[in-house]
Length: 266
Image 1 (cartoon, helix red, strand yellow):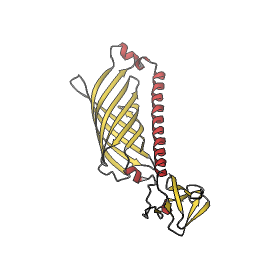
Image 2: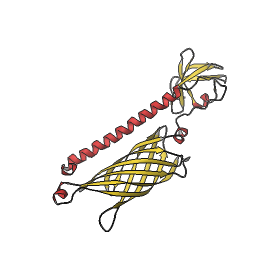
Image 3: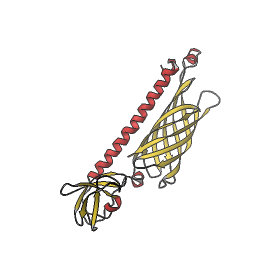
Image 4: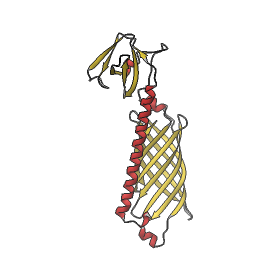
């Protein structure tokens, strides 16, 4: 039905799709943050083993000290924000302590406490990634949503869904991908990607009237990507894919796809 809509209406559908993708990514980010805070709430209490620990009113050194926890005092870790942790004393006093101070405390078993601060350590142990990416599909503006399962530190399996709205036709692309990173421990790391899927092309109204109908075809792809860990649960991903579309004609069609966007992990 989109093929017969006026250009403004078709662009409206495209931006509606874009807003839904951004909303989905934001929802996943909120879920990841809630999971991280819930995980900290399950941590055992920690005991101060240095002379004292300053507890501040907010998660930064610029906030004033609201309480000084003495040696051997017990603290409950409630949640995190960047490299700061919200804690509570046995008497109910709340405050924030730095990661460095927290790592100088002991657990109930007498072991040094090494809680994750939500930085690159969390990224290395992630299980899923979801994101929204904007780009160019054979010269046509496109939006892509992606979801990956991290099966090993080097390999991830995922699904990409792409919508591209052009002047002459619209494209919908669904791909199953496998990505391999040789350097998973790098903050900025390249990777290779291979995929297979389906593409559906819908001509606009004038082309349909001339006899050019919507068609579907199988697609194979190979590409290169670059991902950069920003902070907390955020990634930036840049990816180029060369697509081979299997057609009924003597010669298969070759397309190029560029994407750039954000992803969150949990």
